[in-house]
Length: 435
Ligand code: SAH
Image (cartoon, rainbow, N blue to C red):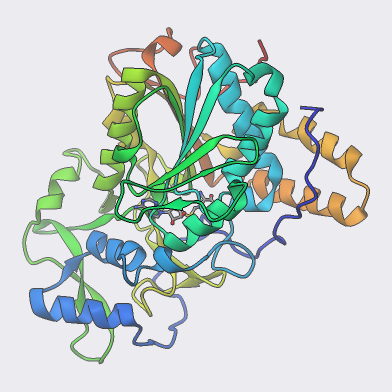
C-alpha cells in the first residue's frame, strides 16, 4: 500500500449526522407538511385504490421514475441529506479495493473479472477501488477488468460518469438495458444498468454499500388478532396529511414473517431477498464474491424505518420525495436467503473489518505523507468517524458471500460460517494475510 499516493481531492467535511445513527422514535419535531408533488400523487393513489403498504410507499417515494427522491437529485455529502463512509475518507474505498484483490488472488487469479456495484452514489467508492487496482497494476496486469454499475438515478449516474470516465459525453441509450457506457481514465470499460439481472453473468466481485437499507420494507405489528401489516393512509382529520393505520385483516406479505418470531413489530424486505438470491446464484455458478456493508441487525430490531433531510431526522410521512427513507438491514434474513447456495460471513462490525484490513497502517502512511495540518486533521477525523463505536464503528456491518469451495471449513448444510469463528482466512473477517 505504500505505493498508493493520496490524491489531491479533499473529502467532505465531517457531518453532524449519518443515516445509520438514529431510530425513528415517532417523536421527531413536526415539520411543515408541504404538499409536495409526491404527496399529491400518493394522496390521489390512496384515495382511488385504498391504503398502501409501507413497501409501496417507500418504493414510490424513493424510486418513482418521474418524482422519486433518488431519481433527480444528489443527496450525498455536506450539502445533501446524509453522508456515507466513502465520502468521508478515501481509506474506506482503498481497503475495500484491497479486499477484492485479496479475494481474486486467493481464489486463483482468474484472467478476467467484473466489478459490480449496486447503488454507487457519486461513484466515489468505485473510484477509490479502481485507484487501488491501478496502483496494484503489476499484480493485476494480465487481468481483464470491467466495471458494471446498477443505478436507478439519472442524476447520480451522470455524477458517476463524471467521476469515473475519461471523456464526456459517454454513450447513452435510455431504452437499452445498458443505458450508459463509458471508459475510465485507465481504459476500463464502465456500463450502467437499472437492474442487477441485466448485468452480464461471469466471474464477478459484487459490492453494495448503503444499498440494501433503501430497499422497500413491509412493516408488521403483532395484535391480539395476529400479525397485521402497517399501511399508509390519508388522515381524515387533516388535509394533505398521511398517517399509519393497521390492515384490518391478514395481507399476503405476512408470509415473510418467521413462524417462531418473538418480536412484536417486524420489518421485512422481500426485494433484499430477491437481490441476495440473485447474487448467491451468480456466485455459485461463476465464482467471485459479494461484499455488503450497511447498518443493520441480526434479526433483533423492530421499528427502524426513518427519514433524513439536511442531516436531520425527518418524519417519514412528511413532505415525501424531499427526504431519504431507510430501514436497518436484517442480516439474519439475508443469511437465511442464501443458505445452501453459497457460504456467508458476518455480519462483523465496521471497526473490526477495517482494523483487520489494516486501516491503522494506511492511516499512518497518509499522515506521514500529508503536508498540511488541515489534511492531517481531516484524515484523523475521518478515521474517528469510521471507527469510533459511538459513530459508525459499531452501527455499520460487513457481510460477505463466497463460493462454498472458498471456505472448506464452513458447514455446507447451514451455508453459513458465522463471523465469530471464521473457518478460513478471509480478509477483513480475519486478519489480512498477503499471499
Ligand atoms: N453506495 C453509495 C450511495 C448510497 S445511497 C455510498 O455509499 O456513498 C443509495 C444508492 O442506491 C444511490 O446511488 C441510489 O440512487 C441507489 N438506489 C436506490 N434504490 C435503488 C434501486 N432500487 N436500484 C438501484 N439503485 C438504487
